[in-house]
Image 1 (spheres, rainbow, N blue to C red):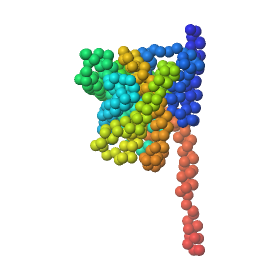
Image 2 (image 1 turned 180 degrees about the vertical axis):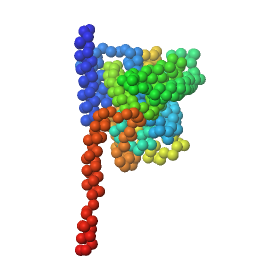
Image 3 (image 1 turned 90 degrees about the horizontal axis):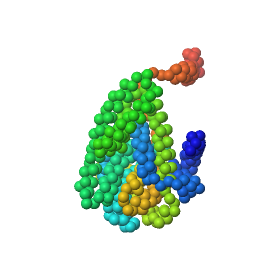
Image 4 (image 1 turned 45 degrees about the horizontal axis):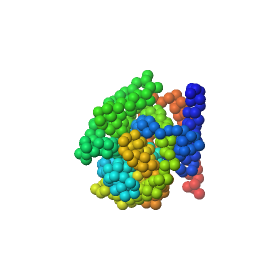
Amino acid sequence: MDEGLVLLLVGALLAASVLVALGSARTGVPVLVAFLALGMLLGSDGPGGIEFDDAELARDVGIVGLVLILFEGGLQTSWRRLRSVVVPAALLSTVGVVVTMVLTGVAAQALFDLTWLEAFLLGAVVASTDAAAVFATLRFTQIRRRLARTLEAESGGNDPMAIALTLGLIAWIESPDTNGFGDLVLLVVRQLGLGLVIGIVLAVAATWIFARLPRSVGPFAPVASLAAAGISFGAADVVGGSGFLSVYLVGLAIGSTPSRYRRQLVGFHEGLAFLAQVAMFIVLGLLVFPSQLTDVAGSGLALALLLVFLVRPIAVWVSTAFNDFSAREKALLGWAGLRGAVPIVLATFVLSSQVDTANTIFNAVFFVVVVSAILQGTTLERVAARLGLLSAAPPRLEAPIEVGESSPLDLLLRCRSRPRDRRRRGARSRSPPVGDHRRRRSR
């Protein structure tokens, strides 16, 4: 294909994604749903007519996209904001995921023609909340800080647990003679343990490096951050650990490090994460065939509604039973279990495996994600308002942890604003002449 035509198509697709994002912001339709719809329109069942059924390629695109999204989510968060919610977020990311998997598996076994292991696999695929959806939603809401921080930490930490359970169950289904419950538990412990250790070690190293980057390499700071993301994921993954947990921890460490480059890195990775979402959702949309959805539409919608109204609230109440959240706060945490790209990416893991019911699982996940994004994503702030859990004032944007010299433009703007500030202060503080006071007293 001609290079010019390729660039033209890529540019047109990116321009279309920007228009879709703009329309999504104005209409209130979640970006995830809009991009999935764009991918479906471009697919073989839509007017685009693009033939695409490569589950392994979609899985690879999804993995890279999740790495970039998790790293950007950690980068936008500082450790001092999460310290107070580490315990409840960790419980939601582990106990909550297991409870969700079990309850969803029980429901899936009754709704679909699945074995128990396949039903629990479907439960594991949809067990985690989506980092991209949660981060994007919380940036434009006024939910109380403690709850917002708990949801941020949970969405960044529960992906590794869901991924480990998904991989373990796939291996168990493919080789039931050589794998069992013990192997599943061992895989989960190994993934989380190695991911945590390697993530902490690399986070300490990244903190030391980014705090000392000289000004001479300033333009290459985004390159260094991309290198940190790739190394942190790859180092954990090659030894059998969770690369997703490792990359989130390293991003969190870099975001908490005072650096003159932090604002530059945040802007760069925010744009990169948006590009990753575009690529992920469009590719995953191409993998969805609307003609195959009708067979599981009723059961898929029933499972999605059960997950929203029953399974997620129960998982939250069990996970936070010994925390000091009020009943209203637990209700909001239960409603905020947004599903998004992660379940669809995990469904591509199933599609690229030897599981017989892979298509059924993938199509069921599609309904779960779409219902969650539309039902929960568009009503989260209104539910928080009804529960009285919105901040009294708009969320205050914290200044980035950034040090360094001011640019000439900053100095010029400050110098131009000072005379005005002085005149305003002088006008406010100007008192009437002494004679006026004396005349008032004499009157």
